[in-house]
Image (cartoon, rainbow, N blue to C red):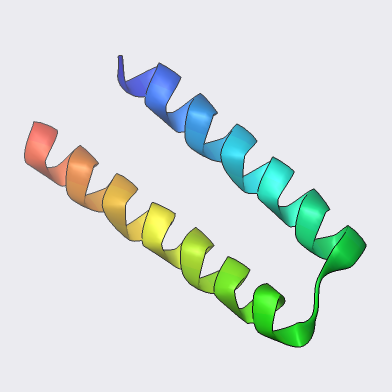
Length: 51
């Protein structure tokens, strides 16, 4: 279950990144960074709560 979630998050981030890089302004890049940080924080919280 967790592996699927990790893979999904990575795929989502990759797709998002590619999209931003293609037609991204500075603001959308900034939003993308926030999104990635949020994903990492959520992932850490999820991992910690599992143990």
